[in-house]
Length: 181
Image (tube, helix red, strand yellow):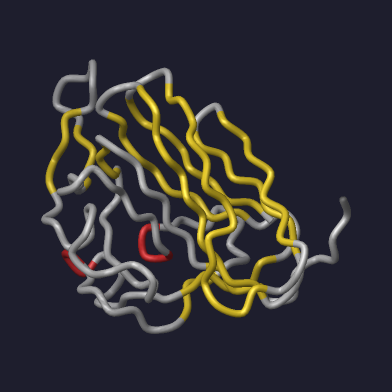
């Protein structure tokens, strides 16, 4: 199905994942995500890189087996996206210059937002994608080896779950989560 390219589509994303650590500092911005859940607001710690001496990830441990990926933890490798709006969570260790963001804006075909997570163990995880979009669009969500098509056939005015899926992660360690327009 071909969909028109999104025009300044606004997206807020979070993913719930059991038994995980994030590789990134994390804060909370999306209104649908309550403060102080998952890893949000927890202290940043040094996590040893498996199999490597004296190398560490900086990350946060989830307090309840859930991981919320928001605009605050995202990287934009193609540099066309921006984190916008004002979120309601403290910027842990000032990693975002003291700001918490509400959405990711500037989506055009080929734009990608990425998050890094560190899995303690293999197993099942539930992925839920919540977004709002000003126009119809189609996204791809990559989680490790899984590639999931996420069509959004019409505008979505307020944040809505557009994907809920259980996936299997076979290998513990660093995993890339990417949302691509």
